[in-house]
Image (tube, rainbow, N blue to C red):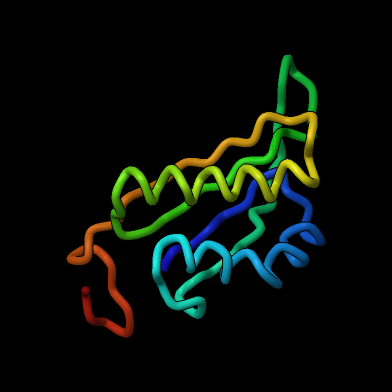
Length: 109
């Protein structure tokens, strides 16, 4: 954990980012690299009755960290995605998970 879900981000971009992004983010939050999951979410966006490409959006599901670490994490994600989508607004949201609601192999944290 953390689990990053990418919307309106091309699969090949996430593939390239996955080579180093988890290591970079793990350093920010002092977390093992193998705790990270990156997932490309296939979705379709609409505006004014028409299909659009959408803008890069990342949902981060994780156990709560300090506001300072969350800010650094979001800023780093933004910086890395801006390299691929310089003209877009990059959105990053965080969903805080509670250990008693998160199960791994049938056991909660």
